[in-house]
Length: 204
Image (tube, rainbow, N blue to C red):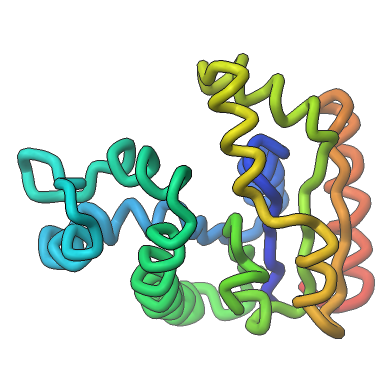
């Protein structure tokens, strides 16, 4: 009933999640849950306490750009932030799942998160898809779609967890690699093919 969706930055995870939504899945995006938490002044105060410099907006919410500027250069700061954010996201996600189940009990749910496996969220899933692409494709997408310089794009990529680590951490949960190096049409065809496999196997 629950499919995990993950993938490193600029691999096309969000594109795949939109395709899955079009196939009838209810998608819970961990990044949007983080946005919701960061917009809560009480939680933002807890985040601010982790950093010596201000990472808040004038409204008292978390400024994601300021936070990113710190944690992408300081792994210790990133780990401190994740230790606070991951449990909070998990609790909020569970609330959302419960709400979905109360309205549409049989709806397939997709949990979308960059660190779905590393944070332990994959343990809730019946299967996990990991969207992948070549490093040079990631770099070009970061530069073209997000306006990053080449050095900034390389810095982001260096902070991404390796795929072999994901495979080791996930254990016995079925893991499918969704390659996204080609066209949108090729990706859509692959997604539909793998989705129908899950339907046939009774996983979703």
